[in-house]
Length: 104
Image (cartoon, rainbow, N blue to C red; front, side, top):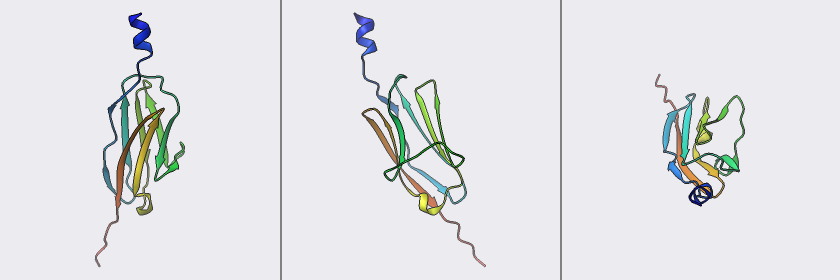
């Protein structure tokens, strides 16, 4: 009975996303850690648009609990709110991409 109760326990976010500031052309990494694996419907979003794994957007998972998003070669227009969703769990953080001012 004790094992059954544990198996049905809801996963929780152990460590949520943190606000990140980077410069244009750099990479921004966001990590969210869940209390246990097996959470369904994991999805990353940037300003309400779903993100998909490609050469600019790297989405990975370690042990089913540590979920990582890396945005490569960011531009100013990538600034916004990054959101991680896993089932009913949600964590969000701000991404600020800073331009480099060139003085001549």
